Length: 253
Image (cartoon, rainbow, N blue to C red; front, top):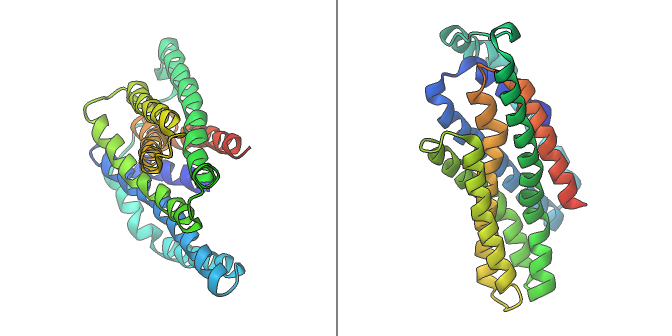
């Protein structure tokens, strides 16, 4: 999946104008959320009615169909865009040492943000049902519903990040604001978690998931696409995506 995302970012950086980047980011932000929702739903359906193996059969079939559509329509869809939008490549000789240094620092900070982001985001998806079950003894259907709904909030998180970026241009500042808001929500959870305040806990977890989805799209989509004139967007997306997966691994561990 990381390879596909990196390739998509690279392709978009070569074919899309800066005016349309916001719409592209919001559109891409819906794909993972909808895909996750469909996979969980199909898995539950097949486990209940047929066999869990059908999930893999259906996923493989969809992958083959989408791949065929992409291959047969690539020339018609992509090449005209590449001709319309000409990207000026910036070589290392045109970038002074100060710019390289500041760019390197930005990547380092974003890499740290990426680990923390997926640690929280995927941690919520993985552990929220278990927390509710062990602390509040909530019914299993509610845990399944939350597992389905949390990824959908990524759509709203992406839209929120894109709209905030219109007013807050600095990526670090924008991410910090979203992180600070998440910290407040999680502190509220820690205060109310032992008071059997199930609705408060669920709402705070949901809002945190939404905010973390926004940070994730800043890191993996917004930054690579908007910095395409300064650095290879595909390479940057791949590096930051790798740190995101590190955070996901830590959350499960």
